[in-house]
Image 1 (cartoon, helix red, strand yellow):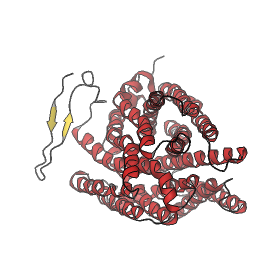
Image 2 (cartoon, rainbow, N blue to C red):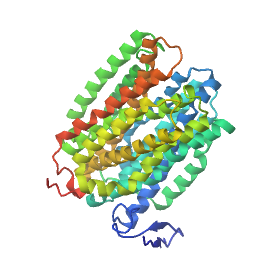
Image 3 (tube, rainbow, N blue to C red):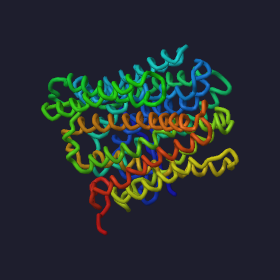
Image 4 (cartoon, one colour):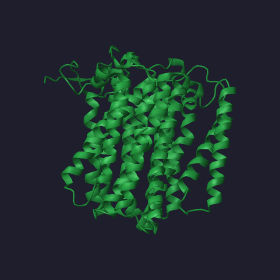
Length: 497
């Protein structure tokens, strides 16, 4: 394979960026031809994604150790994951308007600073309550960080470059999940769990520097008034619903409080939808769901992500509590799924061009759910190589599914509505991840209650993995509503059957 390297030189700033440059037919590492500016922007945004994904996977591996440090039950530590994801879901809807009003570059840089400050506070936590508060601050930074970066990319890329740009955006970001579990396990086993948050500091400094130097200050000319009522309705609805789902059937709070929060969430959710329909420029624009490809990316993508989102919570805990693995050992096993995802990115464009969005999302969704269900059969007697191979395959096919959903969401969105679509879709991504952790924790708690186990046992994890696999499987039939030629401008699929 012939490879060449090019270097970008900026007259005002000396900065060299190596990149692979070769035709698609010659270089599988290049998902498609995209402009140098698009590639550079994608890689800078991926720096923020790298930090966010690294943080999420590192903390998942460290949860049992952190539970012992705080004197908490391991099953309750999922609140450290969901508090961050919930904070993202609440504040992401405002990201598009804020970026248009104050400029993407300024908001992007400030978000990285807030996220990094939250990381420092997490490393200083001496109780679960303090940790949750610091994770909420992290989420406020992350809510602006990734969606605003993605918005910059979407406003500068052609539809024909969309899948390739998403692949370039995702590939460096996937390095975080690849190195996160083994790095987290190593730090927790041989050093202090507090170090898992401190590693975000140098990454944050690098990210701010790159943003200030090279990110274009993209904004709309007239953004209108901020939709405060939309933020209140959506924020209360999401917070109440997530609280209710988190505490349902787990005995953490009185049942009446759980039911009350679920009711409040449902009421404010209805108010949010009604407000959106009556407001000229709503914070969450539900009319975007009238676009078929966007509707499928949201509904089917949410179902798929709920199932997959339970893995970072369930898998490390199962390996450590029932397999007798150390944090370092479980991290080395868990990272296989992320490594598989990294392998898929270079071929995502070719797969979508060959199959199209519809067939890819249906059949690959079934296969991904089956591999997730296979995790329920893991036993301590299984060879580590076999477990690793299943996780590697699962990550490989899940990565294609995520890339397809992310490209499909924006395939038919008019450019003036790209900001609203980014805020809406990013919100749903984070909601689904929050629901995934909640679904995994709830499934585990329910099976423990039914079996009378005081501590989670292997049979409890088996049932929990099967439950979330079924949820993920439901995404396949939800994708059948699309025609075979859906999103052909973005996928390059001919649509002929």
